[in-house]
Image 1: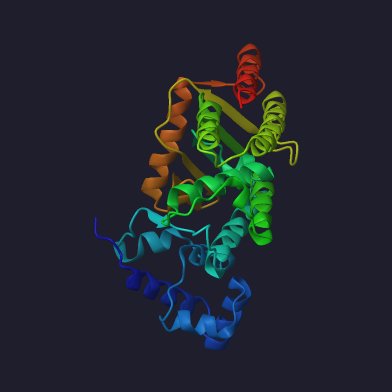
Image 2: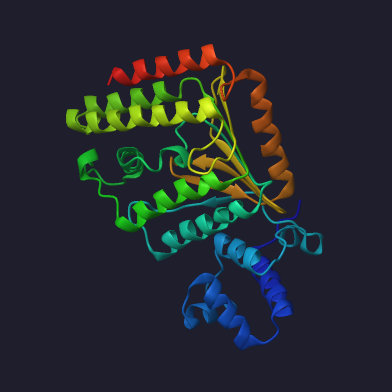
Length: 324
């Protein structure tokens, strides 16, 4: 496979935009409206001084009705299948926020696409489920900073302050992710055990206090109640959209997910706790789709079925959380 260089991709994007909107002034004004940028920032991108980010390309393609497949297959040349998306949650800049906000805008269009799908297989709580619980948002940011902190400074859970703009991003993502026509979740049976073990480790090394744990514990119990309602009724109470929830009998090596919106497809593999590698390549998407659906073979469906198993599962998770 020959990979399209970034310069080639940028050049192809400019060619496509110029064909779509030949008049330069109108093109600049249109991109300013789509990307919420000043004129100077748009001109720098058009001149090639600053590259368009991955999510800027996705946003432009969505708003101007440009098929992303055309970028993948342009002149029979393919782009690299996966791109590592790194957001520095310790010191988020405008570009980091913009990437998130563009992605939320993208998935927000799911409410207008009845056939849209969100599918996730997880051994860590997915953000689409925990993002409205403040202590859990704070916990994963704490863990991210603990593991990626390059200094010797000890960062405690109590030191973490979630900026208002980031908090709003989490809440928006939680809300918009409920708008997919269909959602599929497949969870590692030990997902809460892994989480509790990690929290106890941080408590043992005195980075999480007993009061912090009570705060997290309270949110985890509320989250379990929320999940049990979803599995009992088979839908999100926020939107009424259907959910298929599975519990796997085999452990997962990583977290995988995909998003499907009309002719737009994106596959994700979670990295560094809060980041991911992403791809819109059709081949990679099909592989991801097949992998996630293959996990159903070793999993139990607990939405509107498997009542005994579902009841036992949630009782066990509450017992695990009570150990904190």
